[in-house]
Image (cartoon, rainbow, N blue to C red; front, side, top):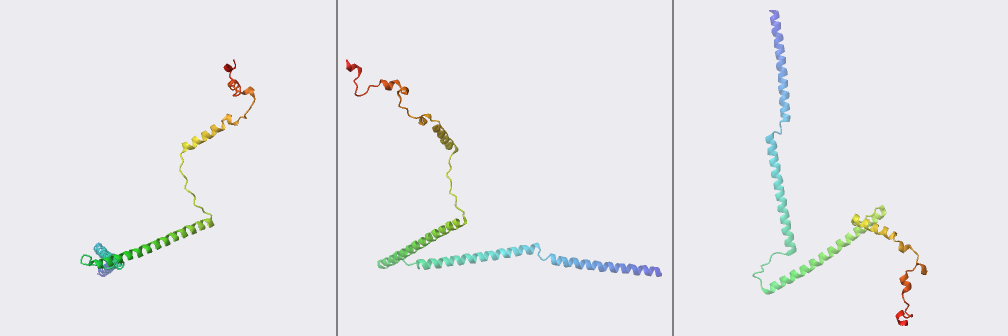
Length: 197
C-alpha cells in the first residue's frame, strides 16, 4: 500500500506540475494575443475611415478658406458691386472714371513690376556669366545640323579645284605656243585681203 500511495502521490505531483505548466502557457498565449491583437482588421478599417474623413474635412475647410480669401481679395481690388441698372447717368460716368483711373494705375504698376522682373533677370544672367567665367566653365553654343552629303560634296569640289591645272600654269606670251587662228586674225589697222586688190 505504501507503494500505491507513493505512486499516487507521484502521479498527483506530476499532474499538478502539468496543470501549472498548462496554466503558465495559457497566460503567456493570452498575453501575446493581447499585445498582438490590438489592431484587428476591423479596427484598421475603422481607423482608415476616420483618417479619410478627417482628411476630407480638412481639405474642405482649406478650400472654403481659399475661396473666402479669393472673394475678399477680389472685393478689395475691384470694389463692391454697384447697382448699374438703377444708377443715374452722372453716377455711371463717375463710376467709369473711377474704373478708368484704377485701370491706369494698375497698368502702371504692372509695367513697373515687369521692368523690375526684366532687370532682375538681366542681373541674374550677368551674375551667372561672371560665375562661369570665374569657374572656367563656358556655355557651349548649339551647333547647326549639317548633312554629311553636303560636306562630302564641298570636299570633292575643293579637291577638284586643287586639280585644276590651268590655274597653276604660267601665262606664256611666245608665238610658238599660240593657236594658228589667233595668228590669222587681221589687225584693225591692216586692210582685209579682198580690199587690197
